[in-house]
Length: 402
Image (cartoon, rainbow, N blue to C red; front, side, top):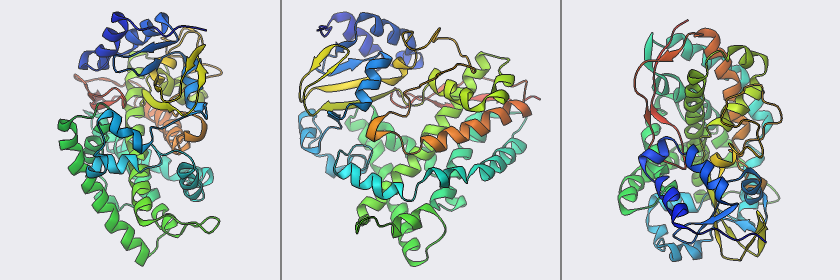
């Protein structure tokens, strides 16, 4: 068996990833962690994996799951139910385990289907063209395109009125700060944002109960499988998660992808030839989701290391996506890369429900963007979101030149 590495260098590298400098460019630190060993131990006792095969094993191993609520007290979150931000997070499908997770996923999957997503392609194509028509000669790509595209797509799918959608960008960004290090300062920002999101959706759900529409919220209100239905709280939590994940991740995917294209010019032919492969490569190259956490339910083995029941494990997906053991020349953007398998959407029973929608938006948006503006170039200093879990930009100035 392989030993778990615990050293001052490991602690230093992991600590750097919590700083703004480390979050700006985590990839050199990931590379060193991959070299040190398959499994390293953080100062707080968590086990960390950074190689592709080991990250893939973590997301797929049924013996690993999310931290159960009764264990939250051990990490200082015993009062989670008193915080709107944590209550919305820890009662969502994102953090639940079977059988609760299985039940909720079955119910939502009857409405949020691959067929429903594919039916959105014409609408996405129209929206992309409208947004491109409205872009100025120079402006913020996040504000002008990367946010309005996915928020309008998921808003239309769920049934959130168009005039209400823009308010959610700062609210969701504030709420999802709890996906990083949870501190009283973070909760002071995240709690009111989560409460506002929940209150809005509660009102919208009640309107859909009275007057159902052809949208996903109405479908979730009516959904029933094997005599089971979503409770009121479950419906609100599901709607909040689908809405937040539906635009937050894709906004960052589009902004990260554009920066990668700007730093690697001449990619338009590959985008047109294989938009599906190109989207996968952009997702791999700079993933909008950089890590996830699991707890071992029972003993298992990851990377040749014995994992004991109760061990906490952090899989750095962004590091696995740059692993030379899996990808040839992984630091190079190659839109024609074959057999691409990014880890960005997780895997196993917790595989991201919205992955098909995010992929579809990327496949439509990037080729259209480069066809319309083949001479795109930076027009100012971008502002990266100060987060490691969710990697993206809050501002991305671009000159839109044809």
